Image (cartoon, rainbow over all chains, first blue to last red; front, side, top):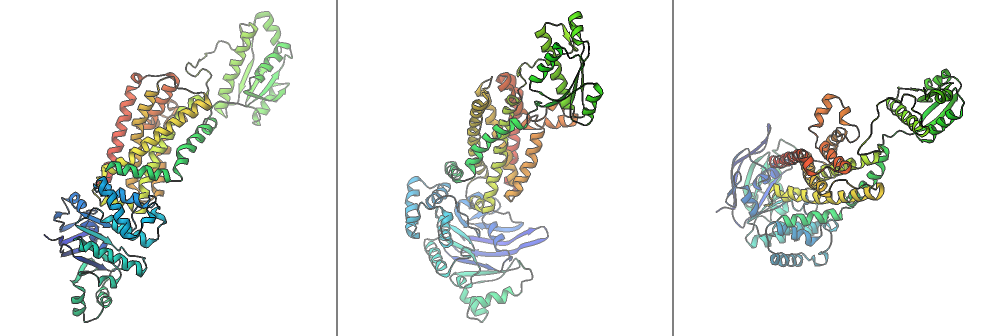
Length: 244
Length: 363
């Protein structure tokens, strides 16, 4: 079974077609990069896959569940980290872990074990009782990711998870992503950083609501006869007619 | 699931610097200030006296009127015309004219006339003033054993449940209702919208938490806060005004329970239609002001125009104000208020259904 299967998925807002008949598949355990300029339709597509928004037409199955009829089952099997930082800033680090663990039905023992484990991996033991608002952004993002996969979902959706984060922290963040993928969690990630695109198994590039290219980074570079993803992206994004 | 969500809400409310102030300081301030500000009792009515008699009895009558505390003497005129001038220049509101044979007539015939002329430009002041004045004169009658001074044959009304027409006692139960309305109706709306603004609501939306459970986790804390607030208000009313309900606390809390559910539902519905806190605040206040003005809290419903009276039937605040006044002043029991209870329940169901449906739709 594929982790994600999308056929001719479309979303219109009035006369504006945000996502225009996109089709792709994501294998279990894969790190799938979902690239595109601002306004290309990445976030809209991702929101449909997470059950946050209902498609206008087309088909999509996430973790084997249909996005129209089984969005509640999808929600139990995915993790999501939005563009906006979305842990509770007025709760302490352990309280956020407890809240989201609890929501996903972890037992008491699992909760306390997970909390210790997670704080240990992130090196946040000392910050256990710190309000999340007072953590530096990079730490917040790492914590946010760890909380998004606290229930060991089949798939995790990351919407520009490293926006505004320094290169060292970005590097650490990607190590967390690799660890998750190694455990079998499928990672679906959007990003603006082309060096990050290189870390993905495969990437798709969206332009004006359509997927213009989809392959492994090395194959894409070969097709576009270049040595870096930046140039691949520029070659495609130049065709874009709609701005932000 | 609900347990974790509630834990989160209470922690957040406790940490919010603004919340405790809203819950404790605002109600106390409102209960202390509003009854005085919204007091319809008239004091300092400006009075002109024309005493043509200059006798002991007439002086006694004037002293009695002035010592009542309701009137302020603006001038003593020799002639009615002069007094009228001061009314025309808006210096006085009421003229009391005592005829020259006042004492003699009283002594001889046991009855005498005085004239009260009220300036009706300010209708309330004039009307209330002349009725105060005639009741003082009647008092004077009784003391002196006269059968009648002035027009003693007028209609008198006795206020059965608030014999001294103390407006504070009348206002306080209504203000309690208003407090619960604000907490339920606007603070809950702000709370959800702030989650929208911060983006945290997205994280909940992608989780398996059902919408109705999320709404419930917002409703319950405000319900509890409402009870705390009501208890604080009841204590304040007792400590400051010595006001204790004639009826049972059980009835008050039962109604408050349903009423809070209704207004929290109202707040939640508003929050589903707003994307910023300003929007939510303004929308909530648009309705809350209408609800307050048409509730009978500040102005009696019976003196509103016909069409406005009809609108008040669709106003949940109206029913709870009536209930609180009836329980506080009249000691009404649940049996007297069954009709009100059904209506408040219907409002609770209506607002909460609206909230759940609108949240479902927005996805």
